[in-house]
Length: 178
Image (cartoon, rainbow, N blue to C red; front, side):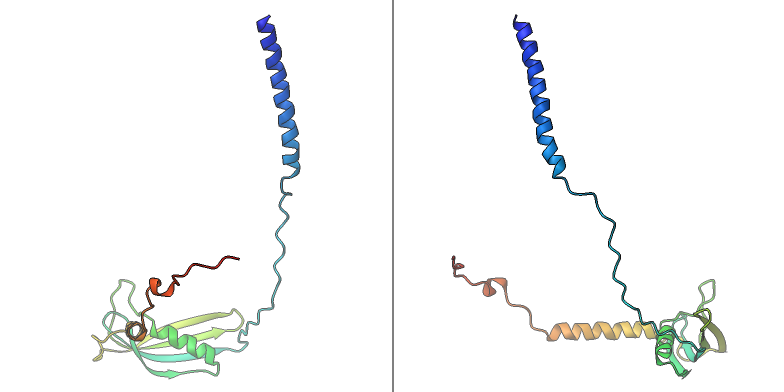
C-alpha cells in the first residue's frame, strides 16, 4: 500500500510540478521582450566634400640627411589650392627618401605632387638633383617638430599649478538630509 501511495504522490507531484511550471512559464514567455527590430536607418547629413575639379601641382626641393630624412624644404612652387599646398608640404616634411635596400644618399631632391581630378589620385615623384651637402648629420624635420612639441608640453606642465589634495576639497560636514 505504501508503494502505491508513494507512486500516486510522485505522479501527483510530477503533475503539480509541470502544472506550476507551465503556469509560471506562460507569463514569463509573454513578458519576454519583442524580437529585435531592424536597425533604424541613420539620418544622412550631407557631406560637403570640396574635391578639386582642376589639376593641381606642387614642387619642393628638399635636403635629405644620411638617414634619408628630409631636413628642410629649400624651395617650393605651390599651386592655387591652399589645402593641397599645406597637405603636400606637411607630407614632404615627414618624408624619408631611401633606396629599396634601406640606404640613403645625402643630397638635394625634387619632390613633385600632381593631382588628377578624374581619378582623384595624387602622384608623387622623387628625383635626385645633386648628391652631397653639409646637412648629412642634421636632424630630420619631423624629429625636430617632435622635439619642439615635447619641450612645449613640458613647459606647459611646469607652468600649471598642481591640483589641491582631495582631502582639502571634500567638505567635512555631513550632507543634510531632507
